[in-house]
Image 1 (spheres, rainbow, N blue to C red):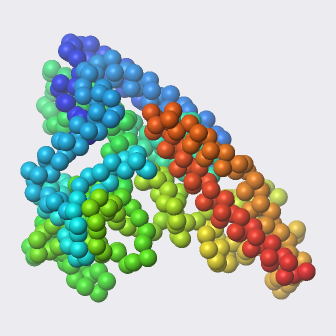
Image 2: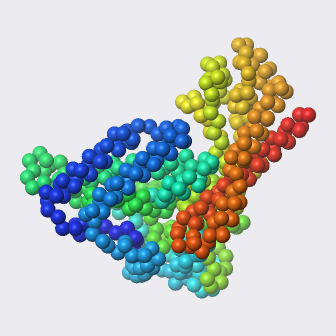
Image 3: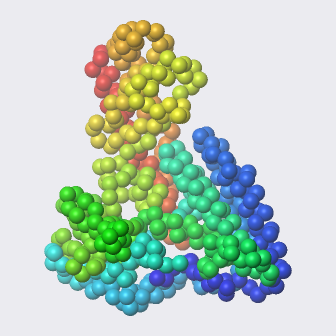
Amino acid sequence: MGSKHELHSKKSYKPFSNHSFLKFLDKLKNQVNEIWKTVFCHLPSSNVNELFKEHLIIRDFLLQIERMQNTLSRKTGSDLPYVEQRNAALSEFLEWASKVGIVHHLVKITYVEEIDGFGLSSSDFVTIGSELLKVPRKAILSWDQARKSYFLKSNLIFQYLRPSPLFEEALLLYRNIARQFTHFLLEIIYSDEFRHERKKSREESKMEPIFADSPLTAVNFKFDLYRWSVACISTRINMIPSAVYKSDMGQPRMVCLYKNFTLFPVPALIPFLDMANHSYTDEDFYEAVHFSDETDCAVIIALRNYEPSELVNIFYGWRNNRDFLLHNGFVPMENIRDTYKLKIGLPKSKRESERMDLFHSLGFVLDSTIFTFEVKAFEPYFHRSLFEFVQIYVLDEIPSNSEEIKKFLNSSNNIRKAWNFLHDRFSLLCASYGEVSSLVCTVHQNSSECSKSIDCSRKSMIATLKSSEIKILRKAEIFCGEQLLKMT
C-alpha cells in the first residue's frame, strides 16, 4: 500500500562513516534520555495550563530530534507536493489492490471535497443486496499474520480547542504518543548501536536488541511516521474470525458472540474497505460490513439501491463528537449520542472527611478531587448521580447525625441551591466559548487561502465541535432553569 511515509532501510540516510554515525547515535540518545527523565518519567499535571506548557516543551524536543535526523536523511518521494504524494500513493494502492484480488468493480475511490479526503462512491447502478466490495483474507493485515511473522499538527490548532474538554484530552493523547515514540526511539538507537559495533562479546551477540533486524533506524524512525501509524491502527481496526488461532486440541478456537458460536475474532486492517467514510442513517445498517465465512472475505453489502457516483458510507459506531474529532479527524453533523464532559473540582474547603464519606457512600471513587460527568444532547440530560453529587457539594456544613444529613440534603433550600449551582455552571461554560460563529465565518471567508492548508478544515471541525457542545450546555442550562421555576 502506498503512503507518504516510506521506510528505505539502509538507503534512508546519506553515506557516512561508522564513527560519525555512532557519534550521531550518542548525541541523539543523550537528547532522548534527557526528555525521558525530565518529562516522561513524571505523571502529567491535572492543571491544563501546566499541561500545555509541558506540551510546548515536548513539541520543541520533537522538533530538535527531527532536525538531527534530517542531517542524515536522504531526500525521498516524501518531498513531493502533498497532492502529488496522495495521487501517486492512490495509483500504487489501486495497482496493489488488483494484484491481491480485491473486488471493487461496483465502487471507486473518490475525492470528497467536503472533507478534503477520499471516500468510496458507487461506480454504477447498484441494487440492494449486492456485494459492493470484497476484500480477501490474503489482503487483510491481521493479528494472524503478525503472530506468524518475525497517530494534530501544530500547537496553534490545539489552542483553537479551548475551552472544549477536548483540549485537555488532545494534550494527553499527544503526550502519550510522544512518550511511546521516545521509548521506541531509544530501543531503535540501541539496535543501531548493536548493528554498527564491529566487535561484540559472546554475551552481547546473544542479547540481540528487538529492532536489530527491522528496517527501522534512528534516522528513518520519525515522530510523524509513528503518529501516522498510531492513527491508522487506532481508527481502522476491525475484528475478523481468526484462521490460525487453535485450541489446546489443535482445533479452531470458537467463541460465543450474541448466542452464536464463531471463530475467535482477531484485530485486522482491511485495505480499501477502510476508505469508506462514516454516516448515520434511519435504516439499520450495522450488518452492511461483515466477514463472509463462505468466501473468506470482508464484504460491504448494499442495503439500498445506489445510482452511479453516490457516496458509499458505513457506520463507524456510536461515540461522542470529541472522540470522532480526536481519533477520526471529523465531526458528524447530527449525533444523537453526543455528550459533554463536565468536570467539577473540589476546593480544599469542601474536602472534609464527612463530606468525602458522603461522596463515597454514593459510589464515587475518591482517588482524585476532580469528578467527571457526562451531559447528553437529549433528555435525560445527565444521570441522577450528578445532581446527588451537587446536593452534597452545595451543603454549607455536614451534620454529624445521619438523619439530619438526609434532612438537609433533601430540604427545598438545598435542592434549590443544587439546581442553581448547575444552572450557573452550564451558563458560565457556555459563556466561556465566546462567539463560535465568528470562527466559522472567518474560516469560510478565508476559504481560498485555507484551501492551501489542511489547517482550515481542522479549524472548521473544531468550530463544529464547539457548536455542538454549546447546544448541549444550553439545553442543560434551560432544563435546570425549568426545575428552578417549578420550585417557585
